[in-house]
Length: 198
Image (cartoon, rainbow, N blue to C red; front, top):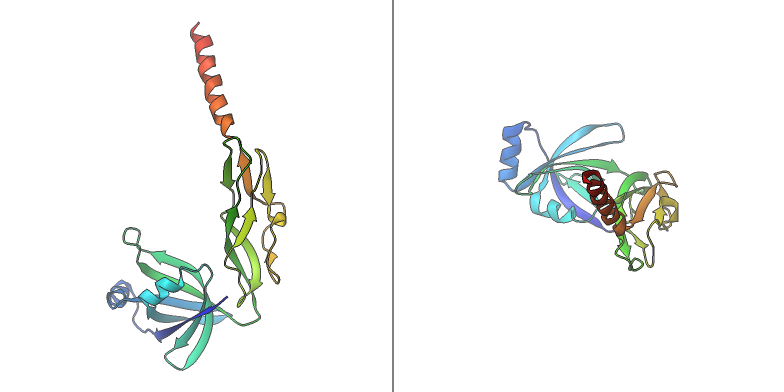
């Protein structure tokens, strides 16, 4: 996993007015916390941070005021509901070699067995524990030939070396649903109404 280097500035102004001024300058208010230290309030360049956050669980190398370097991963991201710009980001301080618990996206490949079945993502993201500088970007699961009633559990997913599950092994991640079941229920209900009318 690659690191994204961003120049950060400490901030001393707080509140809505200060946050608006920061965003007007195309920057984002950020809080860096973790390891039992006091939270550090920073501003980061908005466009660069937005690009970095396109990668899930991105590792960010912060150059704070040109004096100190810290590693962090995103913990909470607040976006404007309408325009989508970043309003505020919480970053979690991490150290090289340290294990962190994160959620990684689950991607699928392959075709289900014929029959118009539906694939349900019970978990869109899989909770895992990984070394902070080696967090997998995603896991890919083959659903090739799976029929209705089949499911893939957390323990069935092959994880990269050094990554372990942070969820119960028997947790259902994906399951295949029969599309005909819904249609059949609708037909039975319609038949029941006809009988009732007679």
